[in-house]
Amino acid sequence: MQQKLKSLWLTETIHLIEAESGRFADQDINRQVRTEQISLTDRIVMRATMLSKQNGLYSSQKILIQSIKFSFVLLLLFSVFLGGSLALGAVNQNPINLYWALFSLLGVHLITLSIWLCSFFFFSNFGGSLLIHCWLWLAKKLSQKKTIQQLIPAFIELFGTRVRWLIGFVLNLFWTMILSSALLVLIVLFSTKYYSFEWQTTLLSSDTIIRLTHYLGYLPSLFGFDIPQDDIIKLSENALNTGEIRSSWAVWLLGVFIVYGLLVRVLCMIFCGVNWLVSCRYIKLNITHPDYQVLANQLQPLIVNIEDADRLGYSNHQWCSPVHPIEDGKGSFLVAVDVHESWHHPESIKFLGFLNTREQRNNILDYFQLTPAKKLLIAIDTDRSPDRGLLNFINQLINKSQQTRIWFINQGKQYHNWQSLSLQLAEPDWLSEDI
View: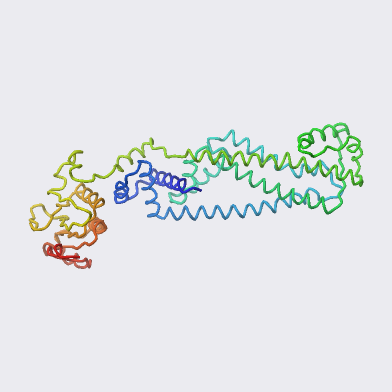
């Protein structure tokens, strides 16, 4: 499977999981995606790929694909075994009852072919196969909101009715292998052993058998498989050992088996395979879906600089202080997290502002995503407790800077709790030092 289709598959899986269980924690991933100058569809796919790697879905998909490939090889080997057994079962008696052998060779093939064709046309809403319908139903019943169990429904959701081409290709490939191995065994047996042929009937007359033999042999005769003469057909009501008669019936039997069995499956396999390859080229996300429209608004490209922010309507009070542009990620800056805005910061240091609200924090993370700082000093009021949300935000700031230090601006009520975290501390003079 192409990497593009794998990525779209992951995207649809993430979509199903979020529709059922709620959105992932994706703010930082969204921020990284928004820095890329790519199309909306590519941004949605990139976000889904990053989320998949984060929650293990990416590796689950790889394991699933590997398992499918391994199972596919095993089934191919098993089909070879089935084909050999089919041929041996059809000619296990000597003399061979012609029409009973023909039914043994082609009966199951024709029945399964009819079932597949009916499901192909009458179950198109379920991927064109009754098997797909049952598979999807079972997957939904067994699903307990686990990510890996959403891969199969997501695959069907993404490819829709195109799945019937894949299922048709796989089913006909297996039958092609079964019938090919059966044909090979028949040729070997007919080439190395004496077989006599006869036909037996209780209800039908010999004339009916002659006409039936001609009808079945007409198409094979176009490919060079001769039909036995009428006198040979009549005499074969009882097994005859003449070499010419044996050879004539063997050729007819092989011709009927090849044309109505193997050739039909090969043509169906090629037809489905070509349509699957062609249809895969037109697979794309339905970004008009309401969920993707909401996501599109959240994945708009980041503002590159403050002038662009002003031009597009971002007000300066979001930053609570003048923001100094970071050039090439080489700046040294101070930020204050959960510090009262009456606090006076050192005038000699580039101060990016107070980060006390969610909007202010998102803005600074967006800014550092585009232009990471060389040095970043985070001022902390130790009267505030080091809760999980605050520590998570500090970790995000650390990831946006080459070097980050913490500055305790006081020894407040929670000072000892902050000290127990073993953070890297520094004073404002650290910003002016060379790295």
